[in-house]
Image (tube, rainbow, N blue to C red; front, side, top):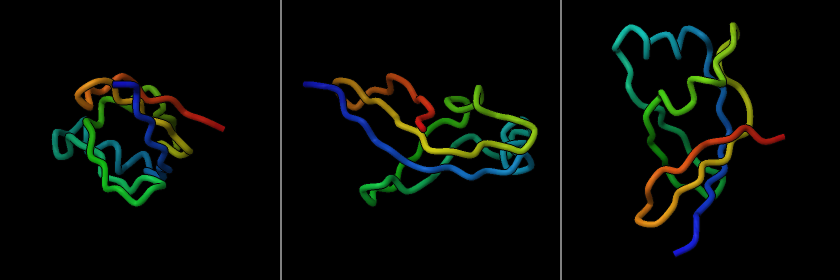
Length: 75
């Protein structure tokens, strides 16, 4: 099986992501470009956190068995 790529947009404020550090939130829920609802661990996007939060367009890669491979920010 080849990799599957899922594209989605995020616009999370710093305060929304802060809930992860406070233990209130553990996952991110969003709608992919193709209409699928996707849920993934918030830690997977932590490296994109800035003082304004996490904003941008992202692509998630899933490998065999729908195993998480990675997320990258795309232009």
